[in-house]
Every structure is written in structure tokens, then in C-alpha cells.
Figure 1 (spheres, rainbow, N blue to C red):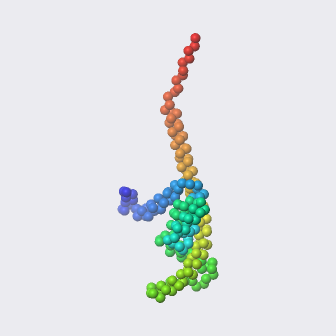
Figure 2 (figure 1 turned 120 degrees about the vertical axis):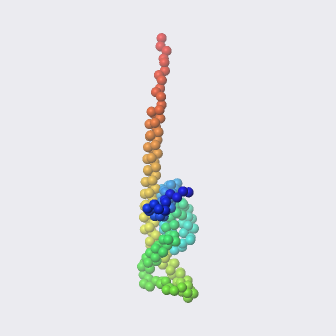
Figure 3 (figure 1 turned 90 degrees about the vertical axis):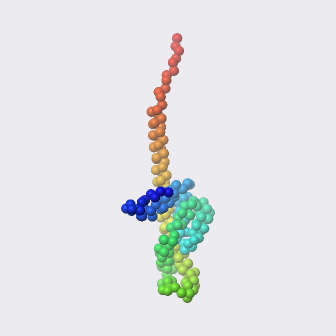
Length: 193
């Protein structure tokens, strides 16, 4: 594939980062199916993406979407809100919210240096950390899913409406061209005596 954004072009490297997101967005808009089911699958994926079970998000979201008869592809796409780049922010927020909701004053503190004792300490605290992250993920995930549903349904319906209007305009243009190209009808000669 040819390089669409040359390196020396101003903003070229920024566009390189934006292009995959733009492609994913347009791919999302072109998902076939009922817009409501697509948006519900997307919201479910966002909600599951807030959970602390990274690596299992798709394995959780897709069967749930199938169970509810929502769009599985949009659910699988949305779980990628939690990825290696965004996970530190998402899990930091969900941990903080989970601590506040559960009224935990002093939560887990990261060890200052890595050692076997620090690893054992972290593993002992893991169930509590996962519990806090789960509660925080639910509290943060519900509004994120609601907002995601709203934006998804709006984007899909607007996109489909624009496509419908373009198709109608093309049909009207084609009909006008055909009207102009048709030769006038010849009148039949009648034999009158």
C-alpha cells in the first residue's frame, strides 16, 4: 500500500496515528444490522472493557452480546477501549472510584523496588485489588456505556440517513438523465377513410 502521508509533510506523523482510528470508525459505521442492536453491543463492549479482566474482555463481551441478541462485532470492537495504552488510565480511575465507593482509606501501595517479597506481597493483595477494580469498573462502566450507546446510535443513524439521501439524489439524477435521453414517442398513424 502506498504511503498516504509522507514523513516530511506537516502533521504526517499525527495522521499516521489517526488513520487506524478513522478506519475503525468508518468500519463501525458500516456494520450491518439494526442500529439499536449495534449500539447496545457497543455499549456492552465498553462496559466490559472497564472490567479488570484484560485479555478476557472479548471472551466475556461476545457471548454476552450473543445471549442478549445484540451485535457481537460492535461488542468486540468496543472492548478495545481498554488496551495496553489506555489501561493505566482506565485502571487508575476505576481503582480510585472503587476505593471511594467501598470506603477504603488506604488501598494497595505499589512497592518502591522490585523483589521477591514485593511480588509475594502483590500476589497476596491481588484478590482485594481485583475486587476494588471490579466495583470501580461497574461504577465507571455504566455511564461510559450509556454515553457510548448514545453516540453510537446517533453516529449510525446519521451515517445511514446520509447514505439514503445520497442514493435518492443519485436515483433522481439518473431518472432525469434517462428522461432527457429518451426519444420522443412517435405518433401512430391512423387510417381514416
